[in-house]
Image (cartoon, rainbow, N blue to C red):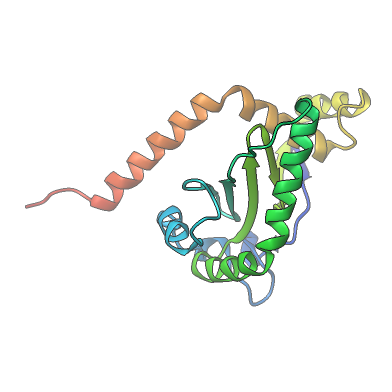
Length: 202
């Protein structure tokens, strides 16, 4: 018996010819994506001085590059944590508005270079906000036991649909398996390095 397809999320990326992900007709396909190993270095050289207190956190996958930078801390005194959180949120909003045009231009250049959408975020203290991030469709086959798990989450009101329930489950796994996933990514990076070096035949 075949499992049923479940689509997760909805975004601006379409499904390209031959099953690959792309931007639609005339856009790039997943198989054509250039590597983004130097993305952190490229943004370090391209971002204006003074935007962030240090190098931003840059996360890359097949569809998107997310840049989250730390803004200078607030020096004012606040009555309580709620007031401080509101002030931090307001400062992030000001940064978003003041840098909008330049961020758009940097994103345009990066998207041309890496063939991925660019999204932005900022952090101050305990407050972090992402501006506009991509929600990308993902197709998967699920058998009845897995579908029943999703339906239970929907029936319990945890999620509004199967796709939202699956996205919730993926986030939960990511939160509880972060250390393991980090080790797995590091191991994969080492394999990629060895593959690129090739054997020493001399």
